[in-house]
Image 1: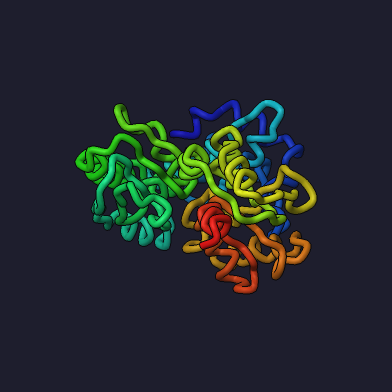
Image 2 (image 1 turned 90 degrees about the vertical axis):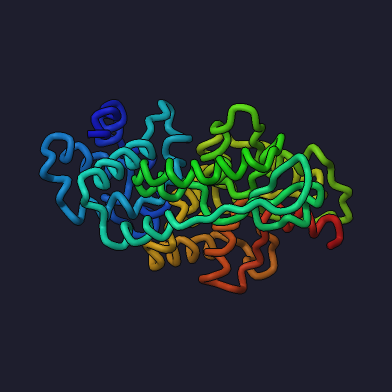
Length: 324
């Protein structure tokens, strides 16, 4: 079983309460099972008796995790509870026990057709090609990250091979990736092609700012908790003239409404809605204060459950700063 590779996290997390306040799902369900300690206790039961893997409540609990990794990032010993959940998801899939909704979604994610358009030595993967007029554009779906997060390792590899073939055939020198989850997935997968986050590229290109405005930046789970708190998005926004203020009551919580789980809203819309409502409650004036996020997923969920949310992406903020 994959979870046997995570004994240190099981042993450490199952009796530890220190990070329970950082789990976004636990903060809206108030269930002990939706905290790192609760999940670790369940996984320990599975480790001791494989038959427990058949428990549908256990399986559902593992897929309810938002995988924000805020718990790991702020753990003094950095025990990988997020990796533990990913490991048990692999065990669930390999045992043929994935819920029907998860299997159906996985099948949909397998159907991708990547295509490259335009001219340039760079290749852009995102939703705002107008910011990259000298780059080619690759589109077609998720590159395999969502399948990986769901526990479908082989299927994820197959989808990535299609993406990789399209990228290599583009003959690009640099792959610019906007969505943090895709950036996390792709950053170390190419030998001779540089992969950078869109904020890194835009920061290096410079922004001629025409704005001086206050904004709140919602940290991306993948850029902060998975990638050492990548500084480029904040530096880019500050260089574009935004005066960034702290969102919420602390700088440890995740406000990305399930970004870490990539397709969270497709499986648990009722929980995604609760996560979005909690962000609304934490905001000072969510209808008027400008809120910026690096993740298109996070923006879409916040707007889906409350269209009045004044939230834009980092790329949109750059366009706004340029006066567009």
